[in-house]
Length: 151
Image (tube, rainbow, N blue to C red):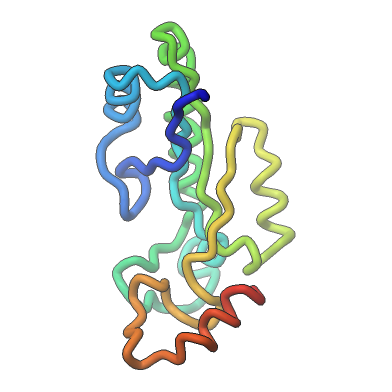
C-alpha cells in the first residue's frame, strides 16, 4: 500500500488554508510519498461574475475559478522539482465542481497538460446553492437525493 493524500486544498481554495509550501512541508514531515493538491474549480462559476450576470447567493459563491486554477497550476508546477528532490511526488490536481454545468468546458479544462489528477464533485445542484448552505429543515431530502444522483 502506498500512503498518499489526494484531496487537499490550500488557501487558493475558498475553504482551504495554508500554502503550497506548507502542505509540501507537512507531507514531507509525515513521510508521504505522494501528495496531490486539488483546489476547488467550480465549472458553473469558471468565468468572472460579469459573464454570468448573477450575484452570489452566499459567501461561498465566488466566481472566476479559471484564475483559481491558473494560480494553482503555476504554483504547484513550480514546486514539483524541489518536492521530488526531497522524495515527494507532487501531483498538480483540481477538484472539478459541477462538471455537468458545462461538459464541453469541463472537458476542455481537463486537457491542460499540467494537470495530473482530477476529482469530480457535485457540491450543488444546478438550481440550488452549495449543499453546505442549504437549510435541510426546509428541503425534501428524498427529492434532493434523486436530483443529486440524476445530475
